[in-house]
Image (cartoon, rainbow, N blue to C red):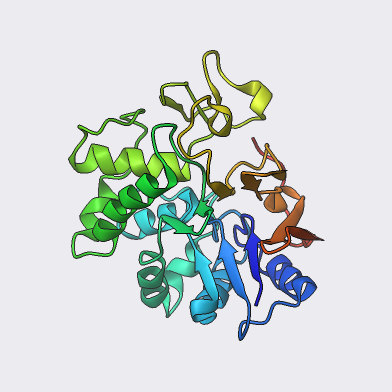
Length: 276
């Protein structure tokens, strides 16, 4: 049995199928770990969701910001940006209800052994174990009867920092924003969401979240995506797998058992013009 961790797909279904063939992925014996952002911007979000859902227990995905955005649009919690978004086929599909119900039941963060799978990153105050506890607070709300109300209160970038004293919607919003949107933050954990460039583009007083001194999750192996401008980064304790497939880069998988990399080029019919 092998476990393949795969970077952001964002509706690049044809490229994903090519990558799975390249890995010789067998759902009867192997597992997929997906870093989130299954959907949006690429042209085949509906097919991607259907494929991952059909794999059952062979596929594990955490939620990314685009996945949550799809859920928010469906519940009236965010405005649909028709020019950039490619989610209409999902919303119009006859199985939309089943797909969205499946999506909202996926975890925000997954821990297993030394590994922690999360879309964007973890704030410096959080160990991987603490992050899993906090993710569960979000998952209980997202999977419960008040999920629509939760999604309608999720939009926004404030508060920008964690405090154990936070409660209600602000508390849940900080947890979600850190795990699905963060790139840069200050050493004491104040997040900045406007800059989306390379690590060298960090705003004054900020660092990439994984470079913060004293980060309490530094003893775990973080498996992440989200940051296409960062590109593929492999260190002993960080596997950042968003290699910018949507923007014409390759789609990347790593076999966790031996860290062998597999990459395929983005399908010409799925690559989008580069935006930052």
